[in-house]
Amino acid sequence: MPNPSRLRAAALTATALALSVLLAGCGGGSQEDDEDLTGQKLDWKDCPAPSEAEGGGAAPSPLPDGDAWQCATMRAPLDWDDPEGDTIGLALIRAEASGAADRRIGSLVFNFGGPGGSGVTTLPAFGQDYAKLRTRYDLVSFDPRGVGRSDPVECLDDEQLDTYFQQDATPDDRAERTELVDNTEKFNAACEKHSKQILPHVRTTDAARDMDLMRQVLGDDELHYFGISYGTELGGVYAHLFPEHVGRAVFDAVVDPTQTAEQSSLGQAKGFQLALDNFAEDCVSKTEDCPVGDTAEDVKTRIARLLKDLDRKPIPGVFPRELTETAATGGIAQALYSKDFWEYLTEGLEQAYDGDGRVLMVLSDALNGRNEDGEYSNITAANVAINCADDKPRYDPAYVEGKLPAFRDASPLFGDYLAWSMVSCTDWPVAGAADHPDVSAPGAPPILVIGNTGDPATPYEGAGRMVDALGKGVGVELTYRGQGHGAYDSKNRCVQDAVHGYLLDGRVPAAGTVCS
Image 1: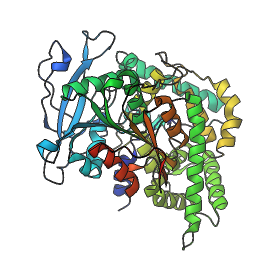
Image 2: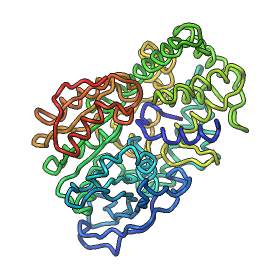
Image 3: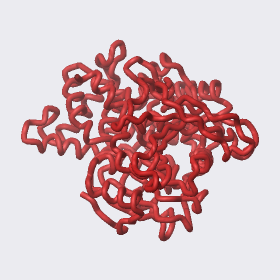
Image 4: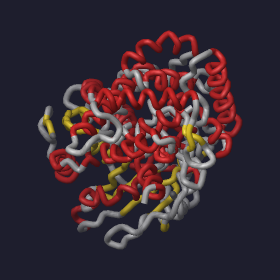
């Protein structure tokens, strides 16, 4: 089932591209493996078009200055406990620094979240946003193991996924609950059948070790890093494992490292409800009439009524599929990731009230990694695989039912949806590693930790808890009083000046800085 509570980022680009259609990766390889993988030489070449697992589409366009994006494949141990055993290929992408060679600091490695998002496709999509950082860094990102071109986790095929995402993810009776559990078991069994070899090796600790190998292969003494959403968890785990190799690092849209999967889902129920409240208030506060309600409460009441109606009778979506209650809920959640998409949410709701579910379904498709050709990236498969390998708790249906009142209290709209998402790992074939990640990093240099007060997916409180967990003298918190998932890409001048000052010039902002 779609699981926005654990999809911590990376679908915004797909949303924008899909909506633009409706509303108007990497090749190359390393040279022969060295006995010591840290000595391998990367064979950088022009990037091919993204693979289906990366989301498909065209090869990345040249950078504004005409330079081409370059791609390569780095070899890494399949099993870090057996570093001399089998290897896997990790897809990398880079844009070389645009400034003077004597001003170059090194590589700046990005992880945009998910888990399960392809950095190889996301970095060029947002590349122009990081042009200033490129003046002193090679911009680098990658498909983490199990993602995109990096030995992707494979589960269901496209046709099966269409059916899977049409199911009722908020069961109202025993029959619907049984169907949901059965479908989840079939999904997990398909993952084991098609990807048994990689499933035990996609934990965040594995990806962190990959990044340290990447640091060495790229020729850097320190890892300079920009982590967004789940990328902050990955960055925190890296800092815990390799504090002596942390360079200048920024964490934006911060995952709370102290929470279990249940606590994270409950926190996101509150976060998405807050974002919905803010959307409703924004809509009715405009000078023109809000087309989806007369008051903020009316907006939310009408949305709740729409979902109940869709539970009884779906409406036409993107032909030949119908917009179900589940798809509509996912589409609404996806639109709340960015204030830039609120206008699409308004349009989608207005059309849905008239029996047209196309816009909400396109939003839902973006959340699930489906493109306009009906092909799915592997973001859902990788997301489930990484989360289930990381998270030790397992929640059965009876446990979830007992927690429904708390989730409904947190969010009347999203509570059931997020509570039932917890069954995703119930019968996963690989044991989870821990209740929550260890990000303590004594001795690491300052890490800039940015929390957004209106973030639906990684609620603001997580930033402060990340600072505390990193340890005294490491995390430096900056607050952005804004909306949407993350802060840097909001284009807020105060936030960007703080990030640029640290990454480019080593100036650490004062702890407790607030940007509005």
